[in-house]
Amino acid sequence: MIWVAGVMALWACDDDDAPMIDARVVISAPDALLVDAAAVDATTLDAAVDAATVDAAAVDAATVDAAAVDAATVDAAALDAAAVDAEPAIPDAMPQPDALLSDAAPDVINPPFADTDFCHEVEGFGPVFGSTVARWVAQDDLSAPAPGALLLVGSSSVRRWEHFAVNYAGYQPLQRGFGGAQLGEIALFAEDLVIRHRPAAIAVFAGTNDVAAGVSADVVIQRFRCLRQRVGHALGWQVPILWIAITPTPSRWATWDVAHAVNQGIEALRAEDLALFYVDVASPFLETGRPPASRLFVEDMLHLSPEGYALWDAALRQQVQAAMRPLSHAAPNRPPLAPGARLRVDLGPDNAEDGERTPSPDYLGAHWNNWHSLAGDGEALAGEHLDDLVTTDGAATPIDLFLTGGFKSNGRAHGGLLWPTAQLGDLAVGSATGDFLYTDGPDMPGGFAFRGLDPAARYTLRFFASRAHPERRVTEYHVTGAGVWSGALQTSGPGAGTAIADGNDDDVLALTDLQPDPWGQLFVDVIIAEGSYGYLSIVEIEAQ
Image (tube, rainbow, N blue to C red):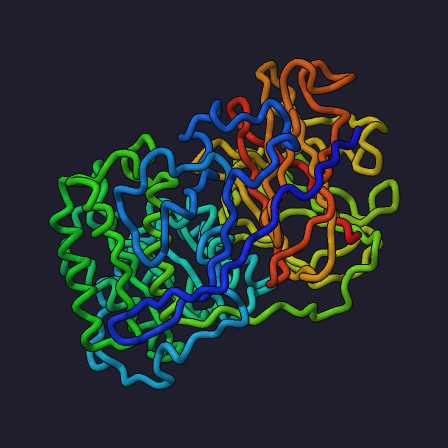
């Protein structure tokens, strides 16, 4: 059975420019693209997907209404609970790709502190997350992301920011965030995390874990100088680096004085470093209280809620717009897919106990794209990518799939569909239906995007997922491109399937007439609508 959903809402454009002033650069903010949640026709959603019933802690995909977060003026009093929408929305102040800014950073900058080596302490740092960095390196070695990105690097707040990619779609966003990361480790792995990507600008959020580990403010500042020095020497000192200030949190309020000293020390470096931008996220947080209001955080009072990320976004957006230009409209670098051409991706682990890679071609003669090698209960992080996908006929394409929110993985040993029936049509391939990626809430929020699409074309997305379990579980798939579309699929619980009592074995969700954004991208949020988890086993994209 195929469930089909169509267009729900389109972006609205406003032609008024809002002037904003940086300490050194006068800019004109690009136009805002706004979508109010009320414009999304709820009748096309599964009746079970009621945002009011979804626990906010479980749905990191929630976003803040653009009206409450004007990038030019953030009023903390306006960010009350009513401003939070339970569905992702097209971000406010999305840059218009043809409205290029005036020159931002100078073309050539003299090294501000080239005569001193600040990396001696970093060289002795004992890495903790080397295996995580190595996974990115392996994927980048297979196919490197294009240069010129807005690179966001840092700790778990970077990893958990699912909507960073869609919010900054026009800046070729790239995430490199890993939980627990210290600034010392980021500086140590600067070549692999930052330099090799040749970004147009670099946003950094780190240092909070250094401070929590007892590192002094002076040493944390020195670690930042090491990172800045390595980037400057390798890429040129004119490449902007944006320091997202360490954010005050209730859980680490006892060390705020040290964190504040770090922020002050790095902000002071702007006097000698013309390409350093200070993103003051601390002030709007402190305007809500000391420590900041609990509504800005999830249950642990450390990581950000959607309201917290909205404050981040408002502060970061101003500095990004001052530091770099958005991309021009995308143009396909190869002929667009012919109508009817399809790409299929098998998502899930490939260890013997939990899953396997789908043969390409399969028993029906169709070619597949398999996610990278991954063990059951493993993690796939935001920023990981699978490039140059092939069609079911085996033809190469310029289309890539990249993760915007992390997933965990499982499969055969945990309720995957091992023996699909003809009701699933040509998706009835057990190696693809038997394993899955899943989201468990804000820590692994679950999201991905297709990049390299034709902005003028229309596409259909098909989703399949199944997890046999007595709890009723419904997953919503929320798509953002030139519009917003959404649909839901019951994966588990009573009534989920036909031959299987508590697992989906007969339903595929299809969303049709999807148009990419001006940069050729479609973003998908995988949202827990009911139950404890949200799932995805197979995604297929077809040119209409």
